[in-house]
Structure formats: C-alpha cells, structure tokens
Image (cartoon, rainbow, N blue to C red):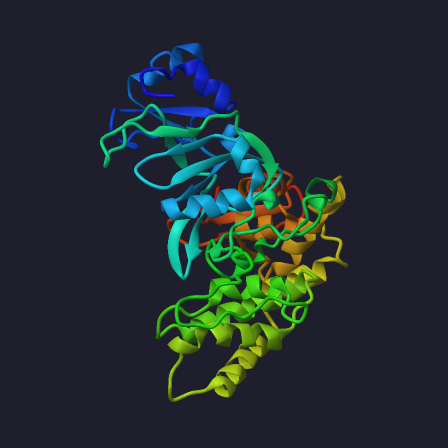
Length: 407
C-alpha cells in the first residue's frame, strides 16, 4: 500500500472496530482533546474527512482492545517476529524506524509501559490512553509517509501469547491464557501498582544490564521471583534504600494475595543486579539486614491487614449487595477505616485486588457511594497524587451529607 492507494475502506478492514483520530498533515497530535471520542462517534460524517490529514487510532478499551507493540529499533523486529509466529498474520506499520505490531487483546492486559533492553528503553507496550499514527499519515521527523510492512486484519490474541525475545523486558500477566476468562476472581500480578507507581511486574530476564553476568532462571530461581524483583533493581547510586523498601512492599503484598515468595531468593536476585550501584562501604550482609528490617516494618501495613481481615467480615449495610465481590469490597473498606470511620483508597488499589481495570474499579466504589455505604469526603486525583478519602457509612444516609471536595 502507498499513500496514493490507501482509502478508508482499507483502513477499516484492517483496524475496525476502532476510534480514528483526525490530525493536521505532518503532526502526531495537537492541543485538541480526543479521549472523549468513542466508537459511537465514528459516523459517516466524522469519517468523511479522515484522510485529509494525518490519521491516528485511539488504543485500548475504547477501540475494543486494539493495542500495539512499538519497537524503536530495526534490529529488534526480526527477533520479535521469530518469537511470535502470529505476528506474520497481523498489521505492522512503520514510521521513521522500527515498527508497530498491532494486536487486539482478548481479556486483560497491562497498562501502557516502556519496553527495556539492558536497562534502556527500546520500545513501548501501547494501550489505554495512547494513540498511534497510521498510514497514509506523514511522519513529522522523516517528512515521508508512514508505511505498511504487513497489512492483514489485526490478529486477536490473549496478552500472554506475546513472547518478548530474550533481553527485552515487558510486562506479563502471570495468569495463564486458559484461566484468564474462566476464573474472573483470580488476582492479577499487577499488585506492585500498590507500592510502585504505575509499574507492574516485568517479564523473565535471561539477559542482564551491561557489566553483569547473567543469572539463569531455573527451578531454584523461579521466573516469578525474577519478575517480582525487576522493577526495583537499582540503576543509579543514591536510591538503594527506597528500592529495597519498595521491593519489600511488593513481597509482603504478594504474600497477602497468596503468592509463595522466598524473601531470601528475592534479595539475592536484587543484589545480583544492583550491586554495582550499592555503597562500597557496605556489603551484601548489611543490605540483606536492611531488607529484612523493611519486611518487618511492613508487617503492619493497613492495606494488607485490612485485605486479610475482610475475608471474614460482613460489613454493615452490605446485606443490600447481591454480588459476593462487592460484599468483599465493602468489607475491605470497613476494615480500612480509622476511629472516625475514614480511610484513603485509590481505584488502582481496588483494581489490583479485584482484578479490575481502574476505570471499572471506580464504578464499583461509586456504586457503594450510591447505595449509601460510602461517602467520598474528598476526591483524589492523578494530579494531586492523592487517593480519595472516604468515610464508611453503612446505611443510606448520604442524602444528608455534603458533596465531596475536589483536590
């Protein structure tokens, strides 16, 4: 396909259903808002002028799970194709270098996140909240059209069918392909979002950052432990204490969610990769003791204690709920409250614990508000970096309460 032969019908045959975005020629976007658009907005009138400028596609749930693997360098394309036979049967687009491999994901998938090789960003998993530019758009840097390296209707797969080649670190879902739909109550492996800002578990690494000898993944060094450690590996000096504390939080939360974790193995893996950035005046034993102290401090983490306690609690007012998982959420909120009945809770924490997208978790919490179990005292926001403050009510008295304040 070339710019002169591409038409709307061809784009729809490859990508639809999806939300197409209109941009001026030669740009990837401007100040115009687009995240409000949905499939219902893809009317003949809207699409009529689509090819008059650059064309983008909104990724993720808004386009029925349409996502991309964005590889930055040409040398990464062949190893990825060899590791993923399905990739030969999907659409692949190219801008100035590398490529974007298009997939439609069935079931859950991780949030948008960078791909890494030897500690450096080498691409991106692009999903909710992102958009990608497609042919026949003009690339702003190369000043030439985006092209199709392969043009097939986008393949539909589970996220776990994506195999990142050795040395490329991505974000897996630990749940197997077979159980992803059949067991909706299964907890995902994204629990590290509770303690590591928008970072989920990374994939198995059989390659290491430069100057480090590889540590093989064997039965004694299970891939789960490797993936648990990777987001918290020290990459520069001066941040070892915070990295270790975040790792300790991830370990304790994994244990809370029923994951078998060998804390000593976790530390040994962390030390293996982080040693070049540790203080020379200290040693492995002193760092191990620091890690163990961190684990001891986290024993009383209120979130984990509330989650454990909520399994055996019936929260006041929850008798009006039909769904067992909503009852568990009510019990969790009830166990989180302080002496005044108040607590802080984010949608991402709820999503992690209940295997929900954070937008769906917001609706679950809003339902508890609407049914009179919760009152939002003060709304949190991504901008303020604060969770919403709630008060547990338990009875339908919210009509007499003031509206929540926004941060």
